[in-house]
Amino acid sequence: MLWDNTLYAYHNPPHFFLDPWITEYPQDFAEASSGEVHLNAGSGEAYKAGLFAAADRLWNPETYDPERAMRNGLAAVIGPKAVDAALDFRDLYYEMYDHYSTALGPAKKLLALLETMEARPLDDDDLAELRGILDRLPEAKGGNVLANPGAEEGEQTPVGWRTYTGAGEATLTRDESEVHSGQASGLLEATEWYQMPKGPWINVAAVISGSNGFTAGDAPEIMPFTKYHFRCWMKGDLPKVSVILQCWAEGGAAGDRRGAIGGLKETIKLTDEWQLIETSFITPADAARAAVKIGPAAYQEEGAALGKVWIDDVYLGRGKPEE
Image (cartoon, rainbow, N blue to C red; front, side, top):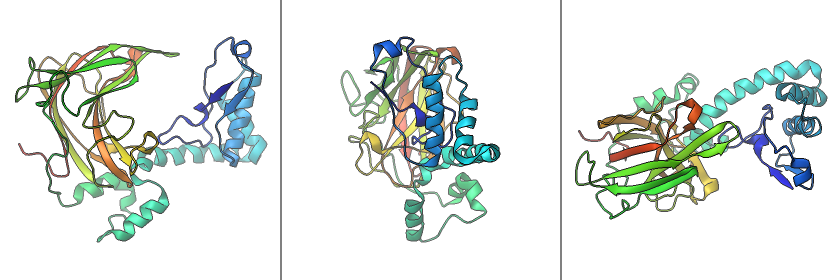
């Protein structure tokens, strides 16, 4: 039996609202399984249209067209005349959801947070400029929240640094041969691809600090709905490196993960010279802990490669780092 979550796997947090359903099953799926598929869906009308599309895929795999199947499913649920309006609304809805849901959290929690603020930062005009609002707030004070930010402590691996392996393989070591400052740096080496239907893919990272990237572990406590400055130094031969601020709500389990918004607009291309990386993030409205993830997350056909990245002098704090 196949338990398939891909119906709502296109957004973070996972969510479904009339997305075309695109998935791949083995050619011998009917023979290799009991023929049963559980599509983990909700009970709303949007899911009903999605399940109609899934049925079309399962019953007619050779002629299945994702967009056409969704349109037919919608027509069956809400009527043919409403299909175009519903799909237009879907696109507008996800433009808001994908940009702001991780930072603002559920509406109920956001409203409760605003009620506790001494000065409410959101008004009708500011909603369209969320990042600009936080940039206009007075600069906060506070030092680095990350433990062992320069990889100085440790023997084979920097104390508190962990390896995240979402897809593929990697190693993380403490290296005294390549240093920006101090006595050591952290060395992440992506060593093996993960084979996806689209081709080789890699998703590994050094996590700083106290977390494995899935659960919070001993990641430092942070303030919710707050701007955090980030800075570090990197060098290496990886052509695509991402910097992510992984946050967790209270509890810190894998299901409590939240992605901060902001950060770098493009991936980093490394060279054999140390380069300074600087950006900022906005933490989610229910964030309690956070850790920095640095590593490659891309397909080979998109320019990704296996290789090394040295990381040193990592900073995450409410105030700007000292020069």
